[in-house]
Image (cartoon, helix red, strand yellow):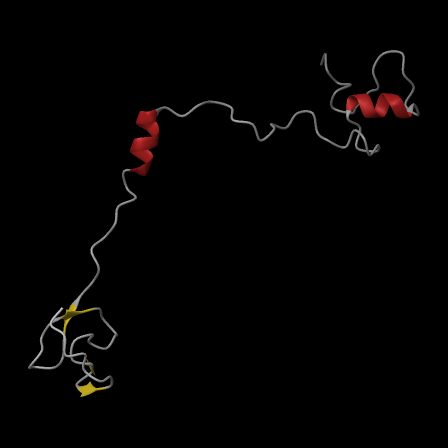
Length: 105
């Protein structure tokens, strides 16, 4: 193995194992200055993603239509989100829980 000194197994040629400057150069875990592992990738971008790959990955990020149910009030019957009081008549599960808005929007 040509680079054993980089892995911290051997000091570089000419340095003693007790030499602090040699430890900081080779990335020996014993020194605070050389605690960084030399064989790990940094957080820099390694390869640029093409537009095609990006668009294929994002193709499944679709907005879904909201789930709607009909109002339980027979006189109203408008579309309402499930488990919520009707915004138009104020009914929820067959009884009035909110005052009716009176608007037809």
